Image (cartoon, rainbow, N blue to C red):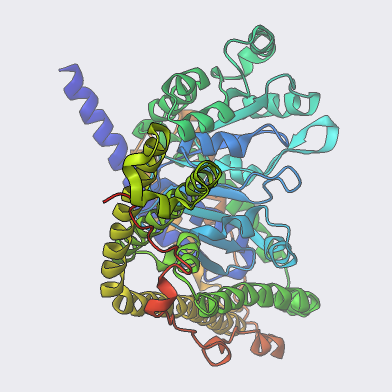
Length: 610
């Protein structure tokens, strides 16, 4: 009966959360038509999106404590770039996705999708293009397949910054978006006063983190003492404290060392992630609390609109866009940097086969360019590698034979004053020593003969597939070029849509009908719902929220139409254009049988004794 009641309650909580989301969606649609409250509307969008996603777990800490390494350890792969010179400079959401890719969200609303291997470009890369792109980045999302991400979204963050009054600073928006915080310290580096003050402030806001102390060797007494000291200092300010070694966990994964993985404590951290996620009541209350705070913010924003003269408001927006013209060159730099990154990738892919003139060079290219790989190519690659290994083995055996033959030949001439070949005509007169040496030579010759036969067999198999395979490789390279062009074209179309939207802004600037619609919706749909669903908010939260709603509804908004037009600058917005296919022609793969055969393969030695 208890389980049944618990299941019913859980269903009620899930249903209440779903209904809240469904009421926030039309409210967001109404308000996004008005650009005076863009930031507030954006926050509502984040609340809706986050409520529909898995719980977000944020890893927080000062610089060089190993947050990124710790996340790599949790995921069991070196996904994120780790750089001592260039720490993580953009907040990164790691989510579950069937197709691995990276989405970059820029401050101006543009979204660009990159291949997974572009993570370094967007996070820690030190090239000029990377720096230009990151200056305009809001945050990125990485999509990969991993079992842990089916339970939660993991957030890697920029380092804490020192703020006013000796308090470390971190984005309040980011803290609002997550359900749990993992505060990362490094073994031997105690939390600073700045961090302590932020920790106290977070506790006052009912956000109590988990402490994770990184780089802890469980067998190190000094490390154990450090953990105990930190627990004594901050135990009341955190939910729990766990010590791990991210480096050990990564090394354990590489070496398949089970004991080292256990010692690293990374599995305990992964288990904790699973235990604290998947609770509908917790997610519902978190979302409802964010929405309550958002309504208070909306009330403040709307209260400012009547105080602004409509004409002055239009004028201020005109000035805003004129001022943005000053950064147009910077935006163009960003666009050129993105285009340059795509062009460089296209150029490299178009010429990747140009310098391939031997089988060995082809294997090197296949090993580094993942887009040239599929089941057919990997099968051919395996045969080619086996062929080259056979050639190496043959050369090695042949060299052993040649070296031994020279030694025996020298000794034989010294003993019998004739060559070894001539002396074998009277083999019965040979001493036991030379018989033994000749036997060793014939044994090596037999090894060589076996390997030589194997080489010829493998050559035959490779010849049979060569022209079909190289045409297939060329087709894969062409497919890669097509994919890059598609990415650029998608980006160009998106920029065109953005320009069209900005152009329509001047026509909608004087339309405050959406605000009036939002007021009515909050009164008729939001207020009764919150009163009826008493599990969403505590009595104190509900009272405060209803007061904010009453103020929103009671606002009197101006109806004077504004006719000021936006500057012609909007029509000159940069749109990325691509002509890569005319600049860089695909260089196909042209290998002949002669290119595949290993050059200067030593002739097979003749057997000495028949």
